[in-house]
Length: 301
Image (tube, rainbow, N blue to C red; front, side, top):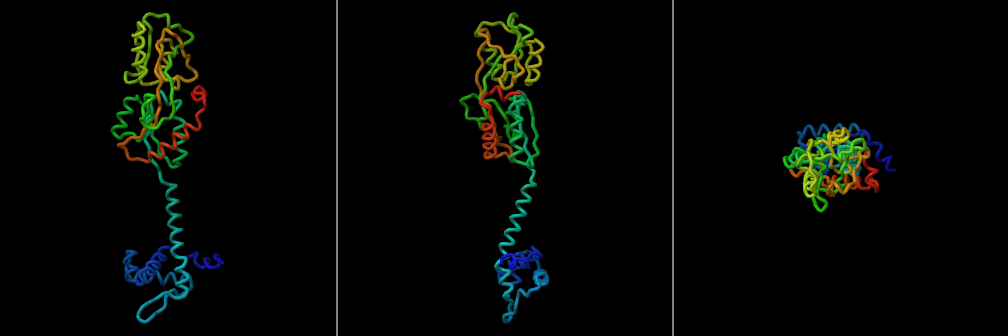
């Protein structure tokens, strides 16, 4: 029954239908023209075209005025629903084509472990995503966040900090090489992240307190560079276990100071305007933690 009633509506002009609804609501072609931002003659032509398309007379004269005919009243029963359905469909289809632009910051030391699943989740939640990733030092990432140059970033925080949205926790480790026994060298050669890194400060302070002479061979913001120098036997490195990865040789020795635990969080810039909302951050963190293996060793590449 509904199909039979609707069959004769399938070829209707949507724009003309808007003019028809405006007439129904105002009772006047003049006011309908004002509401639809058209001339009265243009609205009259639309109504004539609508009648021609449907093969029905939608209006009849009542004295000096036009009123809806029986068929016009039938059309009015469906017209608002038709327009609402049309508008919802247009909005839904356009929404699927909206491109979201996000600039994400990530320290180089998390580029192999934390970054890939975060990127995957962002594309899952935002199918039309234009994602730019900047990998640099934690210090510069925070500067870029504060300046609104990044929409969000993966950062290291203290375990008891409330900064951002916590992704996971990690511990600091010393890494070396099985081929070269650097522990016997005096002073002890080390390669570290830049001074703004928590492991840099903890390593230096800890060696001093242990009375262990050291020689700082190099500082770098790149975990890849540090691991490369360690593998070549240039020095021991201090970094997060996630950053070290499965291929690193982790040292456990009382001659080396303990390194702190850290939190790794997703932080949104308060100065940027983008698609990265608090709701999106919460979704990403939930997706990340739901998929994270119970053993941190299983999560690092």
